[in-house]
Length: 64
Image 1 (tube, rainbow, N blue to C red):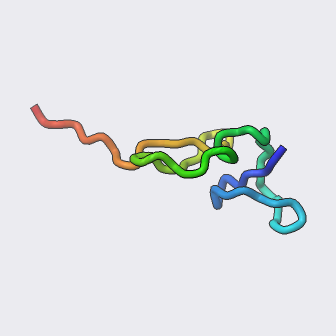
Image 2 (cartoon, one colour):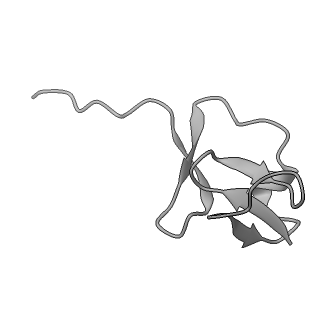
């Protein structure tokens, strides 16, 4: 298991970082295996404190 800080949206390393508020995620969770964020996406956190990818630019509705 690895640790993720939902406030700073970074990995937490035991013995190096303060682990207060960090959540445990599996070693193979996409956040730890993805080398870069895909174009048009940005990092966010869901209601459970888990990292998710969302669209970087909000969709604009066109007026009729």
